Structures are given as C-alpha cells and as structure tokens.
Length: 301
Image (cartoon, rainbow, N blue to C red; front, top):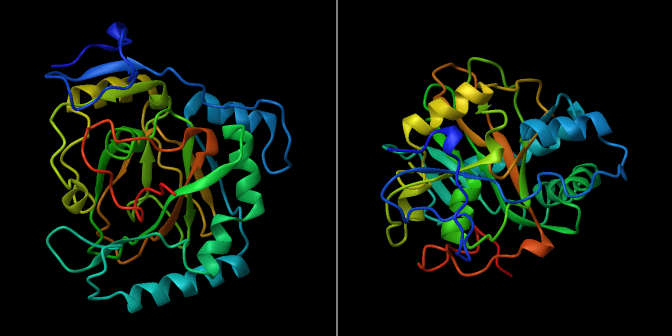
C-alpha cells in the first residue's frame, strides 16, 4: 500500500529526511532540497531557459553536444574496454542477469585516458557546477553496454534512493550525465525518465540485504518503487525517452525516476554515465546501517 500524491508526507522528528527500506508500506515524501543551487548564469553552455527546464522537469537533453571526432575517441576506448574485459572476473565488470555478457563497467574515469578526460571535460563541468552551485567530484562512473539483441532492461528506480540508503549520500545535490556513444533512438532501449518525479521521494519497503550490490547491479530487487507509486508519478508527469545522435548528453537529477527497456534490435546502445556530487554533500555512513559499498561504486575518498 502507498500514500496518494495528495498525501505526500514529510517525516518529522528524524535526522533522516529521506528514510527508505524501513517502513512496512511505500510512502511518497516531498523533496526537501533545491534542484538548482545557483540560478545566476555563470557559464555559456546552457541558457537560463534550459536551466529553468531542468529545474521544472528534472532533466535536460542536449542533442549532438559533442562532435563526431570527440565521440570516435571515446567509442574506440569503449570498444577496447569491452574486448579487454570479456570474461573478466574483476568486480568492476558487471554481467547481464542470466548470461556472461558485459552489462556495465564501473570506475571508468579512474584510468588515465579518454574517460578520465571526459569526466573532467570543461563543458560538462561548467553545467554541473551551475546546477549544483559548488565545486564537484565524481561520485561514480560507468559504461552501460546494451548490446543488440541481448541488452537487458534497467527497471524503474531513483538513483538517490540507493545512494542515500546504501552509500550514505545525505542530500539531493548530485546529478548524472549520460553521454551517448551510439545513436539512441526509440527502438534500441533508450533511457526513459518520468518528468517532475524528482520532486517526490519514493520511500521503498524491504530491508537491505548484506552486500546487496553483488546482485543489484545485475538486477535490482530492493529500492525499486511499487507499481502504484509509478502510476502516480506517470499520471503526474508522463514518460519521455530523449533520443538523438551519438554525442548527445542527458543530464538528470539524482532523484528522477528512470529506467530502460531491453534492446531486441540489432543496434547497440552504449552510454557513459558520469555521476557528479557536490563537495558539500560528501558521503556519510550508509543510512541502511550496512557496510558501505566499494569505492569503485561510490567514491568516499
């Protein structure tokens, strides 16, 4: 059971304003943090109108943000990492559920080279600092490979729910930047977002198991919304799937509800995700009371 949108609650008298996986029923809680932390335009990459759109909807899609020459450098690195890590048992390499196909590779910004440079690209950094209103650091990076025919779905979720409960991210002052390294179109499992869902925190049920990340990175079962919550959010904001050419970027708030379908087409859809957090929002002890997830998933240093 869950509360309706008209019954959105704020939990008072607790140090955790976003409690999750601690109740016996799903709750919809009102966001307690800003979305945009600096409204005074201080960069040339996005306009005041685009910033306002991000604030209202929780995401901003910029088609063909990078040119083909830049994309080719990153795509060559993506292909190299994919072949280099086939059959790898490194913990950073996550396999698809039910197969040995690579689903994700984490911490791709740590090795000197193309993705480290991408994570610190001044055009991206300037936008992120505008939105978060502070200096930033990379909380997490990964490649999500969604190969033709075999790429599996990512079920609906809010990243912040997991980062808060399992990593100890205290407040909503983080965002993701997804960079398309292949054309994203309607048929190859593009990322879908629920506009305006970033204003509501879905407090999920179910206690977090020990070492949850070992299974959740392949298929998440805890920290996902129930169907009634999703219906409520979709009735409020709808569903959009921003699509465009390789080199496009999608910036989305840490609490936006998002997911993607399986890719049953021949066309791969691989994206690099760089997650930025404010230096004023560094991780604390996980709110689940469990051990923190490894540093390659959630940077603590």
